Image (cartoon, rainbow, N blue to C red; front, side):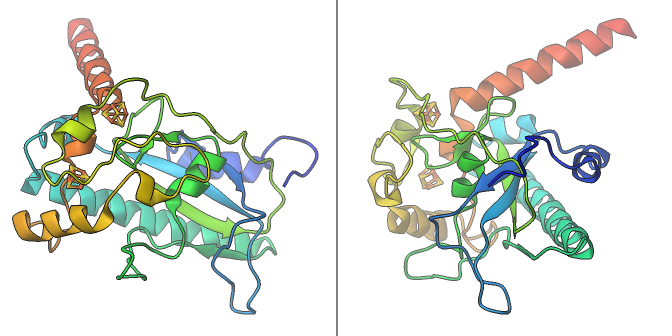
Length: 247
Ligand code: SF4
Ligand code: SF4
C-alpha cells in the first residue's frame, strides 16, 4: 500500500528518530489475516521496527540463558510495549485506525503463537529475513533484536519485502540447539513455521531446563551462536576500542 509519494510522512520519521529507532519500515499485509479492530475490520498494513539487544549479553548465552539475559529480555520487551502504545495513540490522533501487537503474548497456547507473527511484518517491511533458528536476522544487528508491530490503515510506502534467506550453508544454530528443535529448513515467504522449528520441542526444553527465566520462556542459544549476531559483537568491540583510543 503506497501513498504514491514513496516517502514517509515527516512526523513519522521524526517520531522514530527522536526515539533512536534506526531500523523500521512499513509492511503491506493485504492478503494476510491480521487482527481486527473494535469494529471487526482488518488492517492493510503494519509499521514494524527492531530494537537491538546488548551484544555482550547475547554473546554470553551460548550455553544457555542467565539472569542478565532475562533482565535484558524484559527491558527490551517493556520498551517495545511502551513504543507500540505510544505510536498507536499517535496514529489514532491523526485520524487513522491503529492497533499494537503484543510484544510477546501466546494467545494460541496449543500452537505456541500470538495473534500475528512479528516476523511476517518485519520481513514484509524489509527489516530482515528469517534464519534457520526461526528468528529475524537484520543486517545491522543480526538476530539480536526484538520486534515491535503496530497495525494501521495510514497510507505509507511499504517494503520492499525481503524474500531471500542469507544463511547459505551455515547450520550452526541447528547443531547448537540442545532440544533438536530446529529442522534446518531454508526460509522463504510462505514456508510454514513447522518446516523450520518444532515449537513444542523448543518450548518443552525451555520449560524443563530454564524455568528460572521468565517461567521457562527464555533460551536464546540458537540466536547467540549465529554468525550474524557475532559480527555485531565484533563491530561493537572495535567501536569501543576506537572510542577509547580517542580519549
Ligand atoms: S530457543 Fe533454545 S531450544 Fe529453542 S530452538 Fe533455540 S536453541 Fe533450541
Ligand atoms: S546460525 Fe547460521 S543457519 Fe542459523 S540462522 Fe544464523 S546464519 Fe542462519
